[in-house]
Amino acid sequence: MIKKVTALALIIVFILISCASSGKSIAISTSTLNGKTFQLVNMFEGRGITISFYNDEFYGYSGFNTYLGKYEMRRGNIIVFKDMAVTKMGGELEAVEIEKQYIELLGKASSIEMTSTTLTIITLDNERLEFKRIK
Image (cartoon, rainbow, N blue to C red; front, top):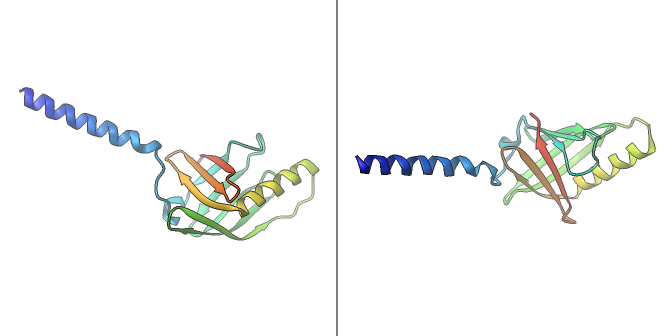
């Protein structure tokens, strides 16, 4: 009886440890990102900036306009955004400046980290764009 209880306790501990690993960064590929949407949370507060991924394409709302392009995942969670385009609606100077800064940061992306609920894009200048998953 004691052996069964010990074995059951070990199984439960193993399950709990494996479930707790969801906060760890995972290897990322286009299939990992496909169909997911994230909202920027660590800068440009209140602007509702998002990024979504579909196959090898990305798109989102930059706080004023929408943007889109293609991305490529490379070994070691390296990400390259390319062929980026932004709609060109005129508007408030502050919103346009924030959008410009955000798009420049995406253009400098060098690597990406992801957990079950977050996405972090790290730039060549070691700046971090932190997103929370919303879809």
